[in-house]
Length: 116
Image 1: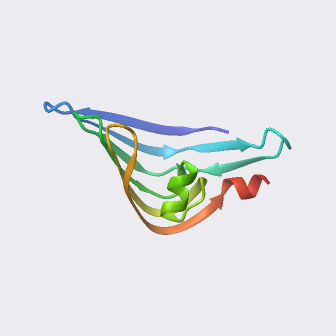
Image 2: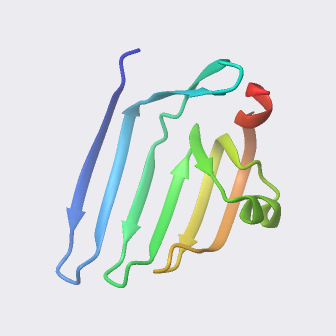
């Protein structure tokens, strides 16, 4: 599997940093109990801005991956581990909590269901 994802990091004078990711990225997930593995395309592109206070803004277009804690998955109506198509935007506070999530697209792969 030849991954050719490229990232560019941009830093600003206010202390924020933006990471731009593009290219090809394939990721394999494995169920350690059964040994079943799936490989998915998570090529994006994506943009993550980390602000000086540690908060983040994530903007991605599919296919992209998302991993959520179970309470957040329930809150936003998404699987805990998934591959998504189309537009995802989320914000994270400095403590790492998701404060908002907007998703305009569909779930390509519910990874846990695919591995069960």
